[in-house]
Length: 383
Image (cartoon, rainbow, N blue to C red; front, side):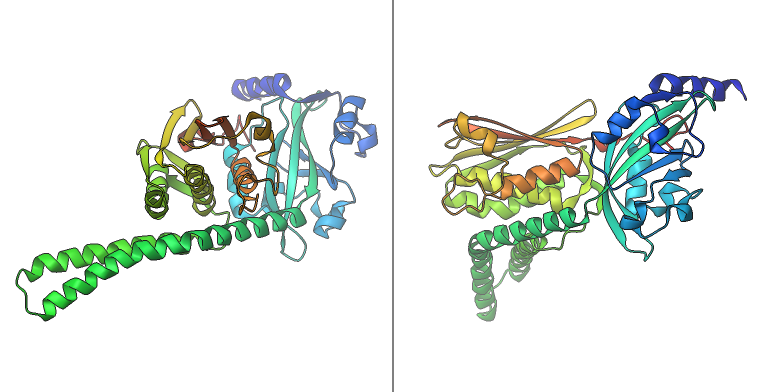
């Protein structure tokens, strides 16, 4: 063993979640130390797997058959990552850290015997085994397919509700450029001069209609959970374009301060839905007009997006209820918008926080990982 490899193995000793002298042979959960058994017992799971440091499956509880339809013996010796959906394999490769004492949690899609992908929550802990001077990973797996499908149904329902509420304002915004186009066409029919100037104005008006209608259609797109590198400033500009009409009706100005170099690895449809929900809520909380600020900053590994309004605020005794399903302070609200927004942010490994003063306004802050600081895989970090 060369010096570099020996040093890596020494680091694994220090940074593993649990330590044991040797692996049970044959492997049985009941043969593991009490500390490991207590950790397993304290978490809900459908099956348990154990993998080598290189990701090869060493052991599976027989209950894997109930979730993936495979007999445990069929998967022993296979590479665990080979059964993950491609996008989830990439997520694990980018974010999984081998040398840590922390338990790591992911929601991923895993392929079953019929090539259908099953959504599961996984909790992964590391165990240093003295006998082999190396780490193995023990993973608790819970089937969340029904929960995931219910969440997607709620998100889709809320998206369509928002689209319906915005439709009247968008129709009004589209009517203005259409009126302009009609006037210019009538002037051209009358044989007016300066046609080139009119043509350019007409093209600008058509592009305005296209932008607004595209944003409305975007809200109704199906949920994809397709994560790509997205410019935050572009997403915010797009939602401001969509919501400006509603803001103007309430005599509200939306201002933005978003550095152009901030990028997020995210599902664009979902993050835009969160931004639309929060800005729309801010507008509805300001019946007397005012200003809404959308500010973005970065600090260390995180990006912070704040939506600051000058509305009626939220009473302190109600703030803890804001993320509860069906709780709303609006007479015609569904009570799902903030709950869904919070869930989307959590699924992107982020956090949604609220600060509010009654009669003065509220600040909703989205905290998300910055893409530029995402951890990359190396031999010392992940298998």
